[in-house]
Image 1 (cartoon, rainbow, N blue to C red):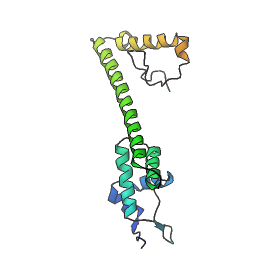
Image 2: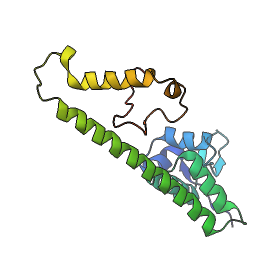
Image 3: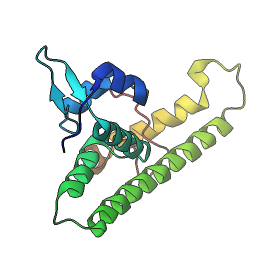
Image 4: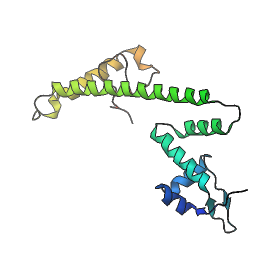
Length: 170
């Protein structure tokens, strides 16, 4: 027996505490479909849509990208997948998050060290030790031809106590 779709996009959005634009975005991304459309073109959704959007939101809260969520949904609907496939994706995501945390901790430590060297808040900006340290760090990077073409992630310099915090980008 087919479930009757009864919620419009507005009702679904309100029930889930998100915008109708978010629902449309999920549709555009191919991770949500209306159960049916009325003759007037209104999208209608059922309880499966509520569960799917709740799944999407929870996965996003766990740090999953829409691409990763799409993979999870594909695994869920694929009759050949097993829990180990899902677990593998979750472990991979956790490792990515842990790497980001480590990089952010290093950035925080570098900023703490910069803050520590700046003891005179009334000093003119031209004599600011934080700016001087950042400039000398950037000059040392630019003067090293091996690092000028470095293809690693520009957000963190793994060999330096100072993070590449985006000066000069943009």
